Image (cartoon, rainbow, N blue to C red; front, side):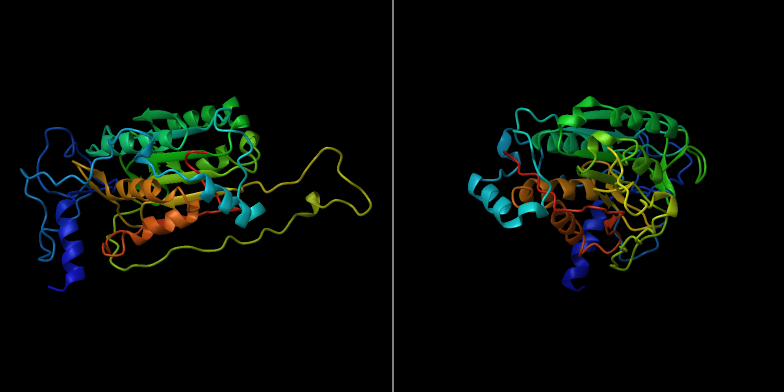
Length: 345
């Protein structure tokens, strides 16, 4: 067996659960056993795949419970000044000192479902992402086990927080079962019932409905399946958004100026990283959590000190190079500048 194949086959042997919606039972609920894949994906006939035995726990990755600020590499003053001097107005500004900023982040994680399998191990992801975001200076609003309507209501409420006015950015993190069209609520039973459309996320936080975040980075992280296929080819699924053509209703007549009205993009300053490409599954270990979230945490911890957001996203994608059954995808990104988190500043 060639070395690269050994690496991802070994990794797959440690991962016992994928994230598709189609598992109409509580097979994944506490107390269940067996190295099965949610959604009925049968890998038993694949001689290259060695699923973990029912009584064997996957070895945990290095703990994310290290205490202290140095759990996240800090940006030195010299590096902070170098980046700001070099990049200039190409980066999103941090206008307020750290003690005056009121950064807020939203985290929604669905673990227990009425009709689908429970997402064992997801609590590890919640703890890790909460610790990461708090270390980056965000107060994290955590919500668990919501229907699609409840998720929409929570987003609307979060978008209205006055703290966004004195913040420079936000993170929006979603973890659930998923389908091609969106995220499963806790009452979902198939591809059409209790599904939160991904468009709802961008609608709630666009420049029309959340003006407090106008011109500020809005980072969307989505851990879910987007279908039931196993991605077996490393492909990049990105496309440049088409330039909209302004309607005649929005054109300003020659010789006139708007009074106190500024025309802005309806949707801008978003950066989105999905855990997988369209129509494919995402993998999760019942012991250590999802591959995507754990690797994302690692890259932010190590590189937020001197890399911009989209470079960190690229590093997350690169970490899946030897695991061809899953590849995170950057989509619907409308960042106008580079976003540096500058931990420690």
